[in-house]
Image (cartoon, rainbow over all chains, first blue to last red; front, side, top):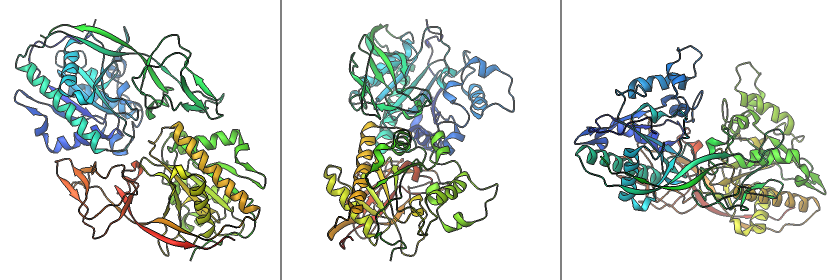
Length: 309
Length: 309
């Protein structure tokens, strides 16, 4: 079902992208550091390439300048004729697609690790497309086993038939790392160390794969995206309330029918009206206000992942 | 020593300004709510005016568009001839000075409460000019006594001879409320409730004052600004490290000579070299990276505040 083929050969072309969103500071500053000191990204069988994905936004310490870079890796944007009116990020996406892709081709990079932060209390969150990506599922499993203290959770964002639009989709395989909570524009030492640990483990996994290590089949738990839930708003579109204290910071915990989800400025509570338990994630993520999302509902699923290779 | 005179008459003209920084969400959304439902700001002897200080920055969810509004209330900006090249915030400062000032005049508002958030773990922080502002010191004392669970701390920012430059300086008296930690662009229900509580207490104090209540003398502890400390940087000005985990989130705790303050990306620690204990505040505040401040050093002081009136 995946549009990607799982690798059979050693992975030689690996990139670590940070600053896809210019105010998510762990990735911005790790990549800048690795550009000065690349040894940390080297393994015997390959050297990962550090890439500052959105340098102009990183300089401005904003998520983006013109549009969200992590939504521009569609064939419509990547293949359209360039014009002077293109947003900066559309131009930058084409540059990155030349460097790391071209998307969908066998010449594309083998793997992109794309580094993100969120203001939500997601802990260490691994964002993959779908459970069909066997190599990526094994990478996630390795990160879980190597870092049990981080309780790495796997999220699957891709809807059936939907075209991927994120930076990682330029490569043949990709994994997004979402670490939180960290405010936009803030570089916390603890989050930086955690991001560094996860990236090191991921590169170690590639090294093991490249040496022909056999990875047995296993059962995986994951959270599959359902849909976003907007804040309560006034007739003018202004916020009329915010995330309820009983939901705030409870990412990945079950939300049951009838539980409070919003607290109105006028004082009353708003309750979850759905018919079944969901697992909210990205609760009160700063960047999602403009997208009309107070949180994303997911369902918890389990599935079998076959052995690799 | 203060440039302001403590009030002798009842305060009738009180403003509550939010969104002075457009991504500090407690004030932005409380003011928007109060503009729709002003009753919460009314007391028998006065009605406080809610003011969205920087509406364009609030719409953009950015701290400012052209320059920091909270640094533009100097006579140089306020009295200069307007030009088409003026940053948005300079023009807006002149508008606010017409509405709430003119600064330094007896026609100015009696009191401004200016609402802020910070990404730093300052709790509930009351920002005043100096201990010479007797009315404001009594207001702070009232907030402390009425809200013991909030542990309101008083900070004094004004250096001798320095002209005030913040929004509140348009009025005859002002107090800044800094609540944290809250990420930029995020509206947490707990912080919103806390801000609301503090504003209500402040208006209650004005009401008591207006009715002729006598407030006895008392001893006050406060934190006086000394100077800012920048992050460690490379020769190119990029960050070379960040706030040490042992300093992060420890606002208002004593920092003793020899304690670690930064952790370099290369691994080593940087230690505080000062000769005496200081009390860091605004540790790792997102907006202060561009100002070259990883934290602000303060000294802890105690002083007597005379009775009011």
